[in-house]
Length: 597
Picture: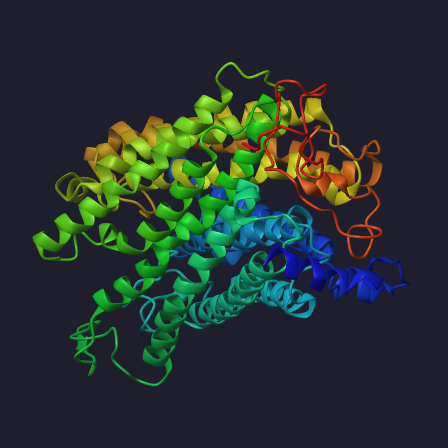
């Protein structure tokens, strides 16, 4: 396959020569994977800021319920924050859209869209993606989806308000509450566009990895980033269509009077004539995507971390084939654990025990990854770049969040803390923080390849330490709020005397959230300042072995001038005995008698 791919790509060699492009074809409707990755990244940064501002708005309400804030009034106006006091309906809408944006638009579209597009052709030695046109469509569907989601904030009844999981009947009955109206419909339209974008991107990634690897790039010589992104795309292709079916059935229930999810509903004492549906059906369809989605979010971050830890520890990654095996095992097991989100739905206890078993099983390949990261770091000649700090931070957050996952995986224990702040704390640490840290690590590491400039290292250090401390300051106390029994998504706890003890914790969490949000200003400034004014990057600033660092600093169409590189070795030959340097590029032929890993 490698040889045929080489011939195929060599046939396109004329593409490598620079040709003039208009502003529109270069920056807007670009077919070049490098430009498309930047489009995904900048869109994700904008969406992330929207989600951060939303989280601050509802954290202020949770810390100081009923108090007016000029900050709230500035963003929400008199309608949704009269006198600066957050409206209860808007509180639920903010929680919903914050979750939706972070999970889908930042951690799925932003993380996979950016690094799959940037790295697949560069690390595999291809001129571009299998289809540049479908790649462009993938981004513009993502952009359109983002616009529709943001537009839903401005409709009269407010945006969708059924939580990011949009469970019926709140999401299925337009008359249920203000956020169940046009805002909910726009949410479903936005997600339909998003799923189309994900499927186009995923099919393109898989086709490129399988067909366009350069000569010598066997699957067992691919960097772990490529394995992670490839398996992420496979998971997305298999699971996103199920969410699409759930959304379409929900649209039918809302608009055409069907009863897929509705039965025996009373509104204001009046019985509706919907019968025979089941909201549990929606949960099955949603979580069949929803749990693989966790790994769609975390696997690219794992791949990025594997590359950065090996490069900056100046050591070969420990257990390369075990790492591939653990990625494949996680990808497979992610499809048979969705029921652990549904232990309190009246599930048959035997079925519950099956989901407990499969969920605990997924801890094994996850632990393999963690131990291999720690062993790679062990006695390494570590270079602490900002990317390396975020990568080691990911290992720390994944361990901390994974331990609470063991509690939630056990049906007997989960019943007590289901839908409390304990669940929020768990998935924000294990999925949110870990994936965001992976994304930051990737941005700091591959920024020189994306923009030909270097980011400011001191600002990177400040960004990491403030973010790391504040992230734990926000989510660690939430475990105790949850263990105290405080349910999630409540507008205020002041009506419940039994939660008086968590008031101070909520204030502490909000203070850390505000400081953590300010730390992202440092990153945003560093990012955009460095794009325009940063010092020029050298070709291989991290002395890394992979193919992307053999391309010129200046971007050119087709990536490499002249013929494509030929690969002779795996990507982790760091500190190899007998070598003059502590790194050996993949394009360096093996010497006589030299063994590959």
